[in-house]
Length: 571
Ligand code: FAD
Image (spheres, helix red, strand yellow):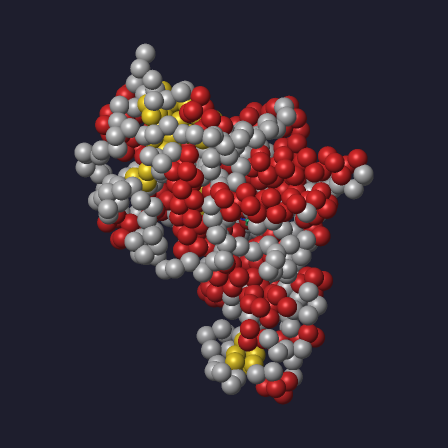
């Protein structure tokens, strides 16, 4: 039998360390190994990806390619600009491939894509090897061990995980890699036929690059931001396995921090450095293995346990990783419907977008369909642009736009504010903004956490609401975080930093910033302008609370809905 000729398809695993799928590929003792990344139009065109996440991806690809070349100077990451569904059948033939190996991906879209690729492989007589490596447990196994149901709590993950068995120890990175064979591409690329419905700025240039399968120079190079027609990234958070492992080493070198980490005690107002690990984008792109993270932490925890000092899930560091697995388990079970309310058996129906004032004597449960409120549209726009007039919310939204990452409790604050704790805008719209701006955007975690914060799934205590004034004051009395992101308020006294509209006008003038307008005024160097709050928070909290009480009383879920007149309503 001739030695196997293998394509290793990199997707959610941009690393060499602890990759069960890469190990499986090498265990085949291939005569040649093609490390391939395909230009999936689903991500290039359809997904909302801002410049910061693009940059992180390109960083990861560059670092991975360099690491591959270190192990074999004749090899590197082969970036090919065509959809995997149409590309692979042609590659199988051209490169006489015998095996295709990749990491398992349980995202709803990925499952569909991989089904098609596996079918094409079968037709071409190519063997497919798929291994899990993206989460602590295989999400499908978690669901199976959770009585076939989506995992909706961290304790369900722990119980199901215990039935699956121990989390496996990480596998070391390979010490060498086989060369790829000939890399000729003599076929025409297939350009996606129809334009997607999302108008992304990078579409045109990305579309052009489709015409050059191996890139403009034909060398399979990783594209630059300019080549993609993207604006330069503004985030300081950079990608790549090398950096991920260095960061993990730095974090775990502080054993006290690692073993006694308690999420609720980490400050959302801390910056440079932040109070949590900021490893989430590395986990998203797979530049860090989650098992590597888990075991580095767990070994320290085990040491500290003997001293009786270590924290435990759900608040500990390993507890955070279990939350991640929980959302993957929920998504694996619910598929496409997980990412929306419509047709989702586990997501509560809430009639978002109620008008700003509600007559409490009226029966809110009639008219369970979306009521458009132009006022709510304005609130949504102001939330998105960080001009709500609530400095805590604006600072977070500006940090998100600039850096692509905010602390978990900061995410709590802005998500609660947009949905059940202020604007009463649909969580799906907030999740879309996060999808575009986060460097760590992970569909399962983003959607799941938005459902948690909007109390539509996972969490039900809607009476616990974050105040944009009292909550940040607990962490940062001086308002340093707000001053960092809303520099127009830099000179405000700490007494007014979270409520600048309450400062006497004479003081506002003295501090060089007037609180006026609705976010459209910019002011000048002599007198800056910060917007007035877009509503009375206490009043809005009451309105939202009333809406949530009614929604819970009615108790409808997304799968109780039906499409009528082009929109959807509950039955
Ligand atoms: P750490 O506190 O250091 O935790 C370590 C790791 O555990 C993280 O890197 C992350 O992978 C995981 N983790 C921690 N908290 C959670 C959580 N609640 N849910 C799932 N995983 C968690 N996380 C994402 O990875 N991608 C997202 O798109 C995302 N969207 C979110 C949207 C909202 C509205 C909210 C409230 C949270 C979201 N999170 C998301 C979860 C969480 O905020 C981030 O994982 C965390 O802030 C990342 O920072 P860190 O790496 O410093 O976390």
